[in-house]
Image (cartoon, rainbow over all chains, first blue to last red):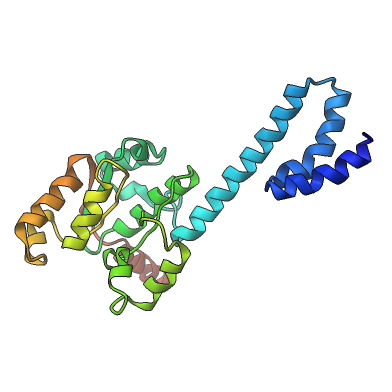
Length: 168
Length: 73
């Protein structure tokens, strides 16, 4: 089979299987593999790795968008200098997202005027960047489906984003 | 409270929850009717948790003071 025939048949297959990154790069990667005398396995691994990485990056962007978090507020922009040393260290350990694997809850206890919301925005954003879903939402909106009449409009809007999933 | 309890019970040891409130746990009973359910919810919440005690003066107030000082100069 000629290369052109392969491309003609392969492109629709990759589109059908929803592998857009592989479809975009397989020809160029094949040329590179031929030049560098790579094995078939190495070539295939490169393609799959690229597809996987693109999906991972897209997932993070999608989760950040769904989370409705204030993206401009991050731990990098948060003035941690005023935090007590103990809390500062605790906040630092949250950034790596290991608390998600341990399924630990985060309970910032503060006076109403303290920096609790900003501090809380940072960690879920880190979580989203690590590929874990997160949302920032008032408690009364979490079970919005059970309170359709009472939910404020912004809650109903957010319910359209992920209607069949448990809120995170 | 039952709604919140259901959520916390569902998430317990399955995934993380981050909750902020201006009320300490000792005062949750004043806003939720059922003290038993409230205690059970707090129990699940606190069991595996990191508590950040952020009893600080307001960031907004300090920022506002800085801006006022700059204007006066």
